[in-house]
Image (cartoon, rainbow, N blue to C red):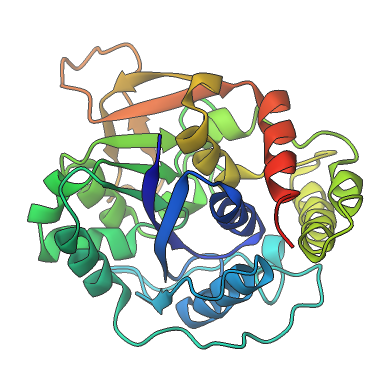
Length: 312
């Protein structure tokens, strides 16, 4: 089914794969990208987004800079995993086209309002600051969306930054709380699902074997991401978290999950940023998202590779 997409992102190696997958998909129209502070500061995130769309031969796709700070908290980045630039591992050229003017959340609002209701899907790959700002300023846009898909959170797997919190949520838990309470039709790809979806062995070599600049970039990013992630977490290979959220948009039949009510912890010093998932419906609250738990990752990575082969 054709899909018009707004991507909110903080690239990030796994963000880069999600963006490339969207751009390689013939039934997806990427309306534009907004950059948010997360893995790296927002300005760097916007520059990385420009590099990625230009790598894919899609320089016409517009990028705008959004929030550089969480709603109420200091910035928090992930250079230990993604490197100084956020997409270390490849010799990236400087962007030929700068990010567009205007503020990311305002562009999200105007774009959703300019399109017919039910035609735009919002894909959130980083902290939810931009999305929360847009929803607070223009609550009418929530009902106009076809839906929202996000990567973030964890319950059965705990967290990857603290024992109870995943990065995209703990960076701006107040923003996450706004989004989860907004009423948007929400699908969540948490680390509960992505940590089960490790990259196949030798996947960097498979990307390099494509013989394209995109394949070379992907191979370099994978090798850096695996080396640093494995050193931090004591693993042998890593999941590309964000690309799985884009994969759900394309191939939902390869995923399984459950409609649940999820709350966000915003005050406890021990569990700040925890996504509290009522998996067994013990609270009796109406579900506010589809929480994905598992996927056919072997098929997904094979399809991603086939899509990447279409790019220059």
